[in-house]
Amino acid sequence: MYDATDDMVQQTLLGSDELRHPDARRDGGQGPLDDRATVTRLRATAPNRRHFCLQAGLEPGPVAYARVNAALQRFGLPLYPAGARHAA
View 1 (cartoon, helix red, strand yellow):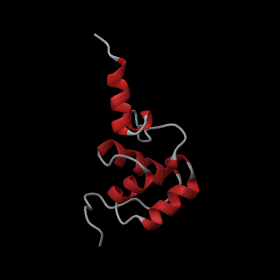
View 2 (cartoon, rainbow, N blue to C red):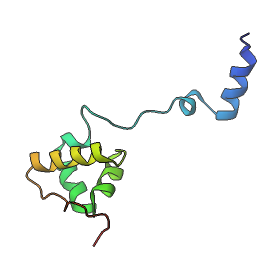
View 3 (tube, helix red, strand yellow):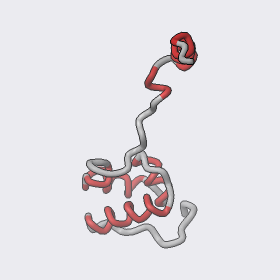
View 4 (spheres, rainbow, N blue to C red):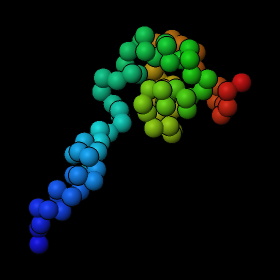
């Protein structure tokens, strides 16, 4: 049986509906990997692909790493070394 007071209590405890339904991380479309200036800035400041993904708002992982490499190639920027896990 539905009770409206449960929703009110939940909303009060969580503060707002935005906390119950947060925005998803960027996963496509117009994003940081589609803008040359953003990709260039991130490549200059991120010591590895994991940091690049975190700064771009992407969940680090194989798919995100492939997207990062594709963006770097598209804009003619140097790729991160394969297997590099730590900043030098």
